Length: 215
Image (cartoon, rainbow, N blue to C red; front, top):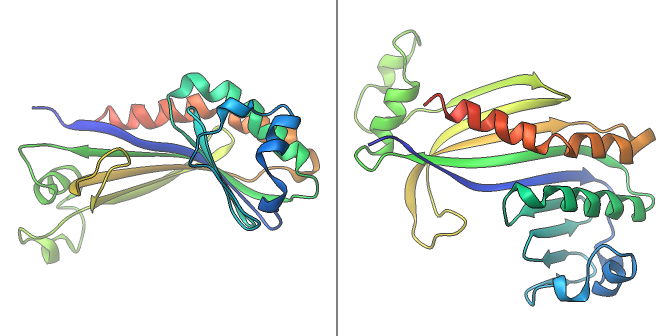
């Protein structure tokens, strides 16, 4: 049986010094045309120090130093979400964005092999000088690589983990693939800079899938 590959989540993270979560209410989003009243799910939370907004398409969390926007559905919604995020930043006057990252987390597994065996078959190499220190059956293996891709820096981290997937309730063992496309925006033209970065979301997703397809 081939290796099973599943997308666990995808999001964009913006880091900043001065988000003000208390400024963003349901009324603020509606009055500024970002969302309709019926878009808000009942588990959304608005406090002075933390915003947690949930819709059928995305989840948005804003703290004083970070914004995290996670896709709930597939990439078909990304154009609308890009528009909402750019408008959100435009209306958040005085916020200085320090960094941005589009992230994809995939997990892989083989029901016939535990992560020790699978990770060894994928990532262990006799060419590694210290490989003999990790020769017993308890050993697990991972991988890290990075490169420039488009206008971002791709950082790929692969680790065997024991965790609960986003839509599951049971803890299981997987090999986790984290793809981080890191970008430093130009704050002199922040909206155009971020918009250009966001438009490459599907390209970054496809590049991650191409890497996984080599397994």
